Length: 78
Image (cartoon, rainbow, N blue to C red; front, side):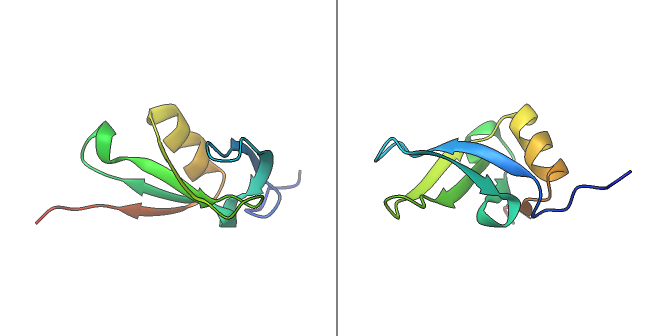
């Protein structure tokens, strides 16, 4: 059985600026987990237009991204 690597997992994404639809490998995405749903999001750079994209991430998205090898940062407030 072959274990998927971060490079082999692809995530479907869409850019709200140019409306481009594409697939991104885990290294192209970043996940930030905050204390609330409002401060939990994922981000990427659109490969079509170069826009910085930031989208909210609910529990299901967080689970999919972390299991797929996306880099995760926990946001802490002192």
